[in-house]
Length: 125
Image (cartoon, rainbow, N blue to C red; front, side, top):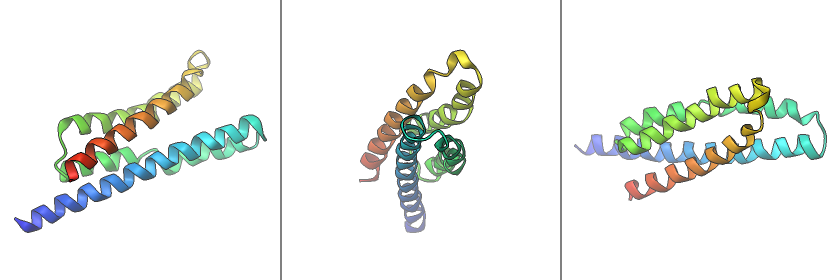
């Protein structure tokens, strides 16, 4: 029983660490976009390549949400993070009429991951 409990606690801790890494990554990604817009267009290369390093974090978080025995509401929200960052963000950059929603999705991602962190921290205590 204690082994199961420590596995659940470890999964929850790693989940939260990944959630914070994802949050910081969104902030950095937004900062890089700002550099490209207001400083030098060459930063767009960094903006388009940096996402590769963190876009799949929600998949890892989803796996950990099961081993950490989080409620379904958190699992759905983490699934939403993945759907927002991978398919939807890529669609918005490839369909010009949807391009304006790209930064709005970043705001939603930021808000959603903070909401996930808040709920996960309540459960962990």
